[in-house]
Amino acid sequence: MSAIILDGSATARKIREELTAQTAELTSSTGVVPRLDVVLVGDDPASVTYVGMKKRAAEAAGMRSETHRLSADATQEQVLELVRSLNADPGVHGILVQHPVPRHLDEQAILDAVSPEKDVDGISSLSLGRLLTGLPSFRPCTPLGIIRLLDEYGVEIQGRRAVVVGRSIILGKPAGLLLLERHATVTVCHSRTQDLPAICCEADILVAAVGKAEMIRGDWIKPGACVIDAGYNRLPGRDRDVGDVRYEEASAVAGRITPVPGGVGPMTIAMLLQNTLEAARLQAGV
Ligand code: NDP
Image (cartoon, rainbow, N blue to C red; front, top):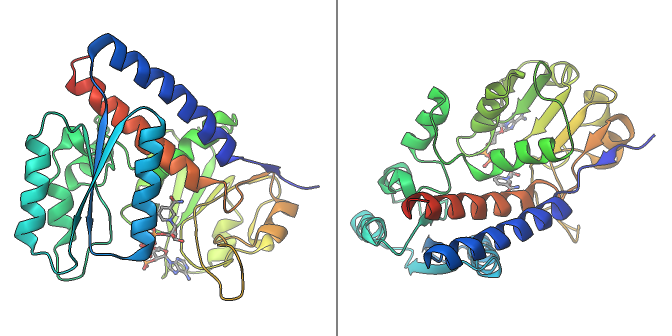
């Protein structure tokens, strides 16, 4: 038996169509065109690609998007000054600082400089603290996309055992918190977890957020489990990226599984647009 595929591309397409209609509605009723501005420091090729994708996606949904590029040797003060000017600009509703920023910069201080009402990436200390507290904030886009995908496919979360492998601040930790908020029983694993395969085997919902190509094997998966693979890894000799899960093995055991590509990735962009529209609505008092 092969697992049901959780098709992130198709789901994201449907969400983006809905967001396009809602954006048009907001614009026709209030004159407000939601605008997402991206700060890109340096010229890391992957970051340049991601920023381009986000801008095109925003524009395709009827939003505006500007990219502000600073050179790789920009100072902390120059980046902060740019963020402050975007905070102060009433025409800008969402701000995303593309990360990672060059190593000489204090990334957390830059993320924390984004106004909470414009923090559509949801990874400032304040937004994450509000998630921890259970207060409203923009939730980080990749974990939010994971929950939305589970919901779209009717995967029950409440009461289920969820295991998240990875504890990064943008992905693993907030994914664990969002699953906890939805009443899963959550275990978050990391590089020092002992007997990882046995813990993964207990998961009804297994979220792989490690960044290690095909690390999670078929025999780490409980039969019938739902496997969410957030990983994107380049392997030499492969023409496309692979996830953190060995797909062929896992899909033979799992009940549901996300492909890579076409699973979590497209959902992340859809959630960024959703947060941007919500930011514009809130700032317009709608
Ligand atoms: P990080 O490198 O920041 O975090 C990786 C996490 O995995 C860490 O918590 C680390 O543990 C843990 N880890 C590393 N090795 C092991 C191991 N052998 N066993 C158990 N845990 C381990 O990565 P990110 O969270 O930023 O990204 C993870 C993956 O998700 C990457 O492939 C990335 O490309 C992808 N990604 C995809 C996105 C999307 O839109 N689909 C968005 C963001 C990321 P420790 O904390 O102990 O070091």
